[in-house]
Image (cartoon, rainbow, N blue to C red):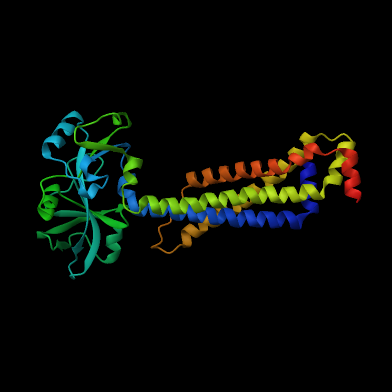
Length: 345
């Protein structure tokens, strides 16, 4: 520790440059990860907030829930077997506010259950972002496909689907609006129900169902690829930096080995330097990312949890350790006399 710290003080500029680069790379990684999670919430918070369980849709729907229609007989059989199951439907649409302005929403209707709000006929429960657009509790909203009107019952936080605010309505109003007697999906909560199969239905875990949402998988794959690319870059930076440092110190290593310093001590010195630089860079990056979270524009979907931050920090430390260790393999091969002669050339 003492030897590592002395070298860092002697070569401040080199270690500051490496620390600055790691700070910028890790900060960019945290911000992009926050944007990826934010877009994920904005695209599918409705589904992600549900408990673990199985989604079922018509097997002829080609994994497209909007094309799925489950007949009432099949629905009844599933719900008789699983008392906590719920049939639900999701359709993109719009509502007209009292000023006649159209607002895009994702209509959601379901049978009675404990994990989705219960809505009476003629009422509507909206995502809280609709309140910021001037809609208030008690307002009457209309839809061109629905003969009646909806009275705003209230607002609920962070309920989005396909980047649109969710509008919970009664299942009977939904059936009248879309002129159908069938629901699209059946959700069975509980991780122990994954083995259940029903004739004519195709089952999906929650993660598998998320991938059926248009744009969700492509959106997340692109952003996550950038995140992992930045993580790999950080590992390469450590490997290149310590390799160049080790090449310059071949003569020094030869002298240290000649006076009896073990190779394991040299590795510990390098690992200590890596941990100190990475830890300091990550602490600053976390502080700045949390500050960015506070000053980010209100409409920006940014969601960076401490769990995600801790996971990424652990990955950065692991990658840094691997990169530094690979670059230090040459220290093990150093022969004292040869290294001293090479350092004198």
